[in-house]
Amino acid sequence: MAVNRFGIVLAMMLMAAQSAAALETIARAALVLDQTTGTILLSKNEKMAVPPASMSKLMTLNMLFEALQDGRISLDTEFSVSAKASKKGGSKMFLREGERVSVENLIKGIIVHSGNDACIVVAENLAGSEDDFARIMTTRAKKLGMESSTFANATGWPDPYQRMSAADLVLLANRLITQFPEYYGYFHEKSFTWAKITQNNRNPLLNLVNGTDGLKTGHTEEAGYGLVGSAVQGDRRVIVMITGLESAGARAREGERLLNWAFRQFSQTPLIKAQKKIADAPIWLGQSDSVGLIAKDDISALVPYAEKDDVKLQVTYNSPLQAPIIQGAEIGKLRVEINGLATKTYPLFAETAVEAAGFTKRLRASVDVLSDLLNNATAP
Image (cartoon, rainbow, N blue to C red; front, side):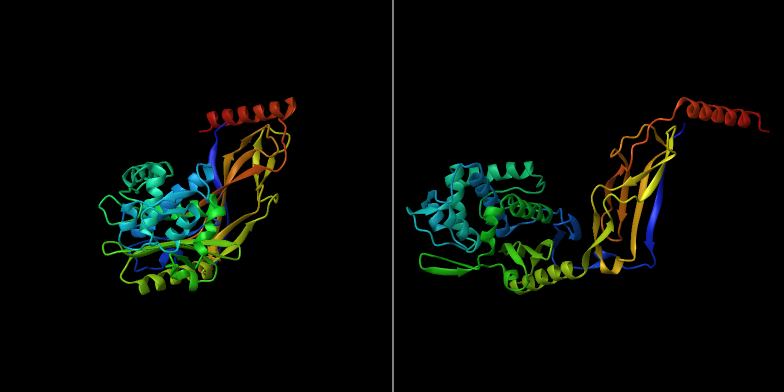
């Protein structure tokens, strides 16, 4: 018997509304991610390779956190400071040649002070040289799925080969948050004192948006002003990346605006209850003529307030399904379509088992099919 693909539309389509992604940004490149649901809320040139400036220090920290997690070093491990590190310009921790500094203090120096000297110390002590460390970072970035990332140094110092994309930086931020919770708390520290010099964290969002707990700013003449930030409000976490702003003030205002927009214009909306039948699918040659389709878990979606009355749910399956059907077997899909956001698909499962029909029912079905064929053959 032929199998046809079709869908049943279960809809709330009461009114049209503007696209959720209609918000504009003055950033050269940007990406706003609802990390909790994996929903991209805004993107602009998100795959374009751009100079990341000090935001690339997040990759240096990733390499350091991996070494900590693997047990190759500990927070108490002391790294030696080279002449190259101590003489490096730009933002710095003010390390002195020949001194030994604990890994924990270097982490704080990189995050809070954006210390170029601290980054070089990490690179040299983990890989032998900054050049070798940059090559290792580039290889590691590709394995992590950071397709546009290449590194010439550990600091973000201007170089034609030092490039990352908004998508890469958000992926990296998400990794630091989820894979290294024991170290992520350092991003929230607002000041750090070293060599009797106290410096404040350069992330303006820590003081502007409730729940902000990271991550890193960056600035060079070529890159402009940028940041990767993240905040938690309620049960949602949002990650934002912007770059190419003209001033520190513009960076702070745009980062604050995008984070507040993400939290205030979207809500997590329940759509389907777990174990509740949402459709019936016909069964061919089964003891029952149909089987219910259910979701094993509650299904919800991040919905823009402007789109709350225009969420489309579509159930699809191969029709009719062939008996026997095992209870709990995946037999269909639920598509969730929301204007301005990517379509998401969830599996649907058989509510009950359906055994194959007995001999009499199969014989009757065969006779019916044969009769239909004969009628069609003799029809004028």
